[in-house]
Length: 214
Length: 252
Ligand SMILES: Nc1ncnc2c1ncn2[C@@H]1O[C@H](COP(=O)(O)OP(=O)(O)OP(=O)(O)O)[C@@H](O)[C@H]1O
Ligand SMILES: [Mg+2]
Image 1: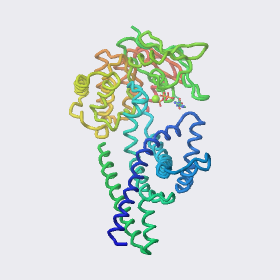
Image 2 (image 1 turned 135 degrees about the vertical axis):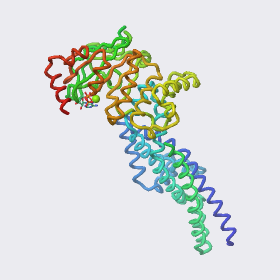
Image 3 (image 1 turned 90 degrees about the vertical axis):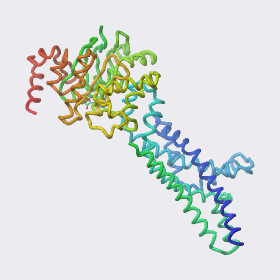
Image 4 (image 1 turned 45 degrees about the vertical axis):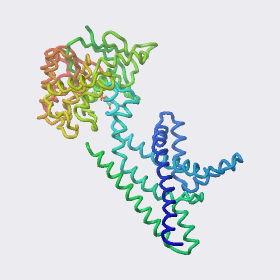
């Protein structure tokens, strides 16, 4: 296989990796906030259950979780899972990352002094207004570095989709390498991941700078 | 007109009885200072009056309207709609300001009138600038709180409270977090408000200040009102706890 052909196949895989990355963020960032609220619920049962789920999601391999999400409709209900591969990947990634983001949101929300809530309450803000106008903007600034870490990990984690034989970059690299007995695809994909992360880190740094206005 | 009325307020934290039946009325235009040793329950009383702290026993009225009443021996809140109305009657200035760090000075002052009272942005901003001007802060409108001194931050906090046109303004040790040289500028602002007949309840350790601006002084000790009356009456009272308290202060 010529180098340009390899490059074009890997690029295609790269696009799929980016797809996993973007969709996972779109779903997991808001979902994480919802999970964080559940975790902080005054209802002990709710917060207990959510805390338990988070610990499972953070305490077991993501690869295993992907396999479970992919196969459970078949083993549990005997449903056909054709066409479920890509959705399963996005669901698996989103749930897993939501668990991590939830803990980050929670730590950020709990870091905001009680006085901020009280000042808003005295000024007549509703609970929802207080959260979105006063608390969340301050939380985002606090948690951005931790979010950046997770997002960079996510770039690399997209390669775990190979476990469901999804044709993202790493899966393709492995196939080409095996078929052509060459190490080259791994080198190229390493460069791809590195550039991908470089861009992500750059964007996140820009955001952190923008938040540094106060 | 009676603006605020607290009746027989009792409050405990677990086994600790903090307030043991306190009553307080504040009339229109009156300046009432609350003094007393640390832990006597002054902040707790303000936090109950401003509905930050859950009520256990006692009643609360603003402008004659009930906010909290007693039923079967326990405090019961009025309906949320009524409470929402009543909350418009008062503001609170905190010891540590609690400004919003991610908002400019002007935003801190103007956002509640805009988003809570839903008033016209331009009008609110103009009024906010006038308020800042009165506080001597018109050149700081676009600064963030972290760029200001403590005294300036506290004046912003006062402007923020005033922007909602409260009928009663509470202060909980407004100068305790400030260096002595910054205390004066905040006290001056409060004094100016007193001269404009703003109704105020001020918890303070500044005895001279309390003596100067108050119509009435409440001396709290161990969860009860140990002495109250005009500044002269309270400062010259024979109450032993009051004498001890003043004695300690002058030796401190
Ligand atoms: N949320 C709380 N939980 C438990 N105990 C509390 C709480 N808030 C206050 N207390 C206790 O209640 C008592 C009265 O506290 P409060 O803050 O009202 O006193 P204070 O008169 O304002 O004192 P200071 O002059 O030091 O501000 C103190 O013993 C305090 O430890
Ligand atoms: Mg206090």
